[in-house]
Image (cartoon, rainbow, N blue to C red; front, side, top):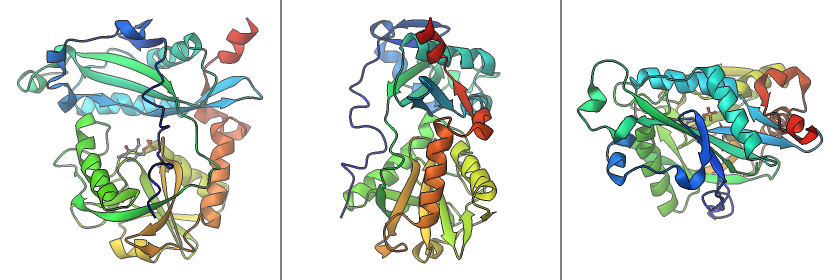
Amino acid sequence: MATTDKHQTFSPDFDKAVPSHLWWNGQIVPWESATVHLSSTFWSGVTAIFEGIMSYWNEDDGELYIWQLDAHLRRLLRSQKLMRQASPYSVAELTEAVCELARTLEVRGDSYIFPYCYPQGGGNFESSTGPGPQPVDISITVRPNPSHLGKGWVRTACVSSYTRISDNVMPPRVKNIANYRNSNLAMAEAKFDGYDTALILNAAGKVAEGPGACLMLLRDGVLVTPSGTESILESISRSAAIELARRELGLEVVERPVDRTELYIADEIFMVGTAAEILTIGSVDHYTIGDGAMGPVTRELEQLFHDVVRGKRSEYAHWSTPAGIRAVARG
Ligand code: PMP
């Protein structure tokens, strides 16, 4: 039974919630004033890049903790380099921009932060291939997106008939908007066929990742995940999950090529990603995984994530950036 409607990764109201302000090229501006001419959108998606960052509200602390902000912004700059974009702002400047925007909006709930770097004036095919880094405009938005950690969501999946983009086609290791056409085709196909999501194989026929999240499998007590050269995004949550599984759960974690049929016989499978968080895969191509519900290791890791991302585990404080809401509230 497909569970798409009630198990959307993003809140169903995500696009409807319109914040009062956003950050645009160095300034916080009213939402309605951030407009561009239609013609400048024509080619912008080809080289545009973005980040997706979750921030978590901690009611006890009265603070918003931005999860892995530094790692996300460093990846943003890596994406810019690979896409031959100029990087007009440093990680420190973008960190302050994100925090200042959250404070201006007085964010008091889990939110999704979306930095977006697109060619100035939209560019065209010729200009986007010019020598040297291409000039960009940058915006940052923050919108409400409640976490689903702890809700026990389970998704059905199929192996997609689409092949994952690869390094010599469109490098999946960075967050180029154009890469998401591949994810989008796989996801749409899965939904048409009655599944919640897709698992995508790479050009070598090995398991790569989901449309917007990485994959982990439990096999005989060992956590297995496709390695960074298997046509996956250089995922930040995946790295965190590996570290937490090793350090907190004492698990052996192996990064290696994964066969399609290993999915069918895995004891547990879950997706891991910023918006996906930890998401149980209950079946793949109608093969039930474990007993079809969230497995014990996935549950433990999910609980850990829940505490760590909300800033409840001081030993992982370096993974969270407080936006400074508490200080503003105190005056
Ligand atoms: N793969 C793809 C294609 C993604 O879009 C995402 C989400 N950003 C991930 C993996 C997970 O990456 P991260 O943990 O950095 O969010």
